[in-house]
Length: 83
Image 1 (cartoon, rainbow, N blue to C red):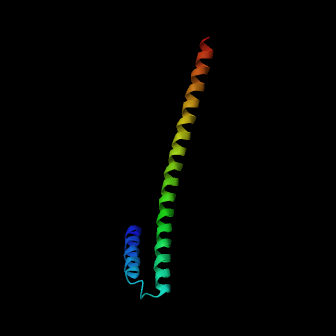
Image 2: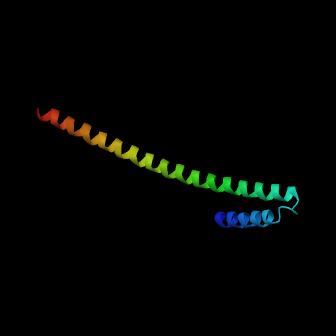
Image 3: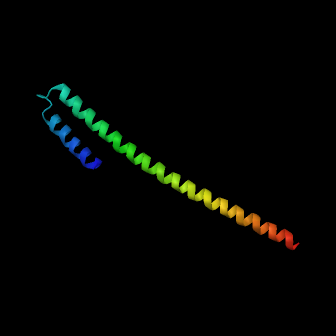
């Protein structure tokens, strides 16, 4: 959805720039600004997705480290009791 919007805005800017000699400078600014804003929005969405995925990995990793520590401390307690 956002990618399609970006593609359309790219085409709009190409159309405006193809007629740059007769185009109103404000039309060029608007087309450029719209494309830039859509591009930033797409980047923000990608960034949030990556941050979410990294957060999930950190959560899972933290859980496994905790479990490993529990198992290791339980094993060393059992070893101490046998000695």
